[in-house]
Figure 1 (cartoon, rainbow, N blue to C red):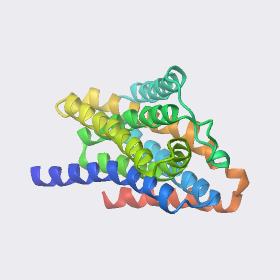
Figure 2: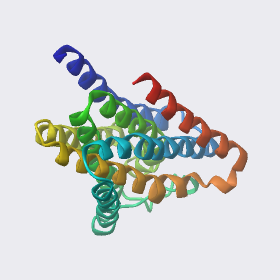
Figure 3: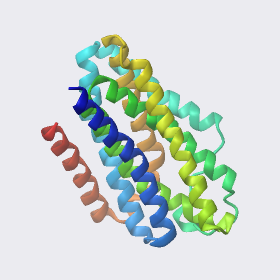
Length: 245
């Protein structure tokens, strides 16, 4: 049993690094087009909302009452809203990737802002069950790829150095890793009630990120048919993950 747990933890840590690293390298080397990035965000948002509502919320309701789940879910949404309001950050615009107005400091804060609660969400899920943690990590890795592509290009425009811009982006990965370790360390021996609340909070985090960050950036109306297909594909992936786990 411990061997399986260790393997799942290794996969989760790999996903934490992989999603952001692939995104950063793709932004520096490949530089995909705007349509690809926006459809990727639609897909990632669909996965994150699907995981939140189809997996995390039902798991939370097995541990706590429906009322506590609902309150905790919206508590997570509110916490992320306050996070975004209190801590200054920017959202990289695909149409302004090369704009020098995007400072390296603000970009770094923006990445770190998202990475910490994302890590907390992964750790909360893993404390409940390895499969839940894996599902969350996979969904977050999916959104890390296009998000980091969209972030590292203007960061490179500011720093004028591929090495420096990649190093800055890579350093922010540790915020997500720290959030994962912190949440799992605190919750691994927690009561069922605490775990249920944590899962619902994590669902709120992911839903708020999806609706506040990913869906607006995806600009679904710009590519309606392709965006609909990417959203459906994301939901299918979530359903298939549920069958596998």
